[in-house]
Length: 184
Image (cartoon, rainbow, N blue to C red; front, side):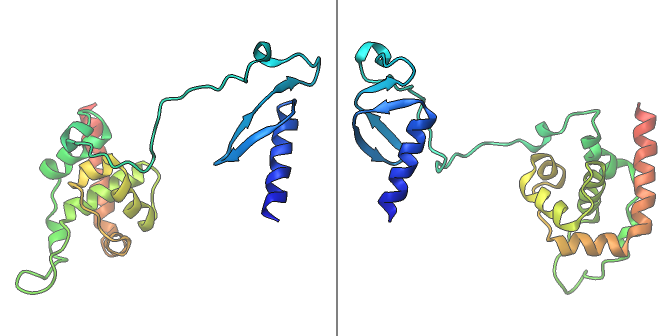
């Protein structure tokens, strides 16, 4: 049964390429080695009767492992909205967010509200409003990684932060926009 479908596929490829083949030497790993291919329209041999030429490509391996050094500060361009890092860290009052956390003696370490704010503000500016999308961006997007120092909070952490601190986030978002507008 498998050979039947393979033969059908090969004959379909040959018809698609408008070739008539006197013999197929080997079908293996998706490569077709043709003995004598002739153009159907006039019957003249391709390449002067020689084997059809095969293009050569540079080798590649999609399973290779590569370590790419990334400097997070170099990923953020000064003057862009991604420069939010400096704005939130140096010019925005984050004291309203600190009252939410009561883990000074016991409990798990919490994400810094500045990190969560950067995720939410930058994500909203990029059209990402879902907690799952924001968490995925923190795992995959270099700009998010640069803004958050490669922090990868769970989507429920982001969603809980937005749900419980939405009024404070609106105020900070307004302050960031006013500050960014003042910068030009």
